[in-house]
Amino acid sequence: MNHHIDKIRDFNRFYTSHLGILNNQFLDSPYSLSEIRVLYEINGQKNITAKDLCQLLGLDKGYLSRILKLFDKKDIIKKVTLKTDRRSYQIDLTAKGKKLLDMLQKRSNGQIGDFTDRLDNWEKTMLVGSMSTIKDLLSIPYDKKKLAQNVVYRQGLRPGDIGYLIHLHGSLYAEESGYSQKFESYVAKTFYESFENYSEEKDRIWLAEYNNRIIGCIAILHRPKNEAQLRWFLVHPVFRGSGIGKKLFKEAIDFSKEKGYQNIYLFTTDVQKKAIAMYEKKGFCLTNSVEVEQWGHTFHEERYDLYIVNKI
Image 1 (cartoon, rainbow, N blue to C red):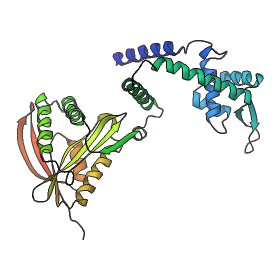
Image 2: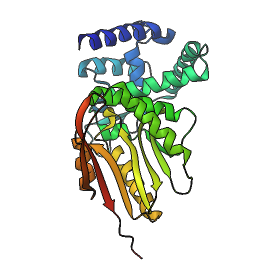
Image 3: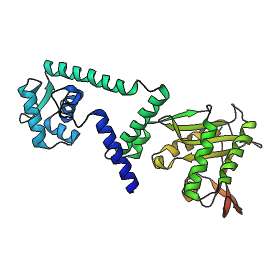
Image 4: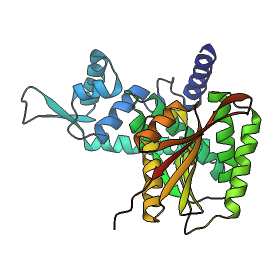
């Protein structure tokens, strides 16, 4: 925990220094960062009140009042009495205020350009993705379902996907189940064997991505006797409980029904309790269980089947 705190403090010191946030005259203007933030919120929000500004920016009521008085005195803002409540007023920028904000926006863009012009497109993508992650994880209240709103879904594989999926399986199962590196080798073998006979018509893989990084996957692969195997079902721990797994699972089952498969089966271990509970909830039944010793552990390898009745 202390290691995380130290890293966050170190980042805060770097970022505030890098942007000049601690300067009393931010962006070479007569105003502080807090005062400029107030202007941005007034411009960006409709029918905003002093109370709204306090809540949005987390500012002390007295401190905000002094800022608004300063802006009012300099003809930067104007106050308009609300029709719905004569005791309250909304705050708008004057023409002078809009001109000031436009000037500050251009300076801010120039400052950011100075920071990022030396970066190539890969580096800029990494920077923006990292910033989005910080914003999502530190949003209050923190909501995994809101986090999932920034996840995009796609079908099929791109160059590099298989290698990353093998890495993701290996690292997560080592962390959560204590599997040895032999498990990662096993996953690599399953990809190699499966894609030797991969059919664009009969098979499908779905991927979930957050900031251009795979955080979830599932696949349906055709098998003899009109069966299909569900494989590589995984959701990164940060995104579990957000509905991503359910969405991927539904895509796989719907595809199998559409293709007319009579049975879907999967292999798992008795260690994966939460996954098994979801399989059973969706109608999968345990059909075989064998004790095995592999990947540094002894457990039961289990097969679950879902028999589909296709309506005519």
